[in-house]
Length: 244
Image (cartoon, rainbow, N blue to C red; front, side):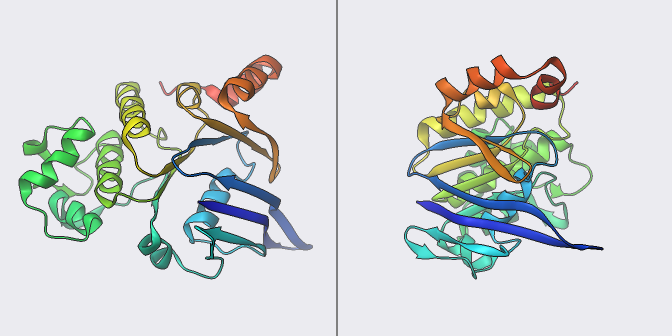
């Protein structure tokens, strides 16, 4: 599926460059649910943007299904089967939810077919299908609509950057149910950047990133107890603080 080989990403600074990602090698297998976690500022979101093609690595190579995609942009990667859900979903004034789902599916879906994707994420389709994707929607509604577009795309790899960010606890509980369903039914792989223990609990594999490097990785049943058992009270709050 996806292979990262010795990926590094540097940004300019007053005295040389700062390494945000440092020599990371990682594999995401077919039909795998991977969660990447770690302290804030460790490089998790940057890694997701490198995979999506929003940023390009300073060094190293990225392969998708054996094809070198290091120089390909976000549109080219999307056409190959990589979807990316932003931490803060984009609002589109004048664009209806139906239009957005049709764009994601790359075909002129009938309203009834588009409504099925909204139902999958727990939204009453008739209340949302003709609404604009604008500021009238809450953070939780936008998150679920964005996930509906990912479902409509049917991507080989779906990447979510902190999907719990900025939403209320009720919406978060519904997101967990959506991801559990995706995990059972998806024909591709899922990668989520998250601090949330409940999301970590439904992963197949967990990768911990700190200071731009992988510090732990392995099956959930081994890595999650290690994280919970070794974290201090302060670290635990950083990793798993629930939205209020």
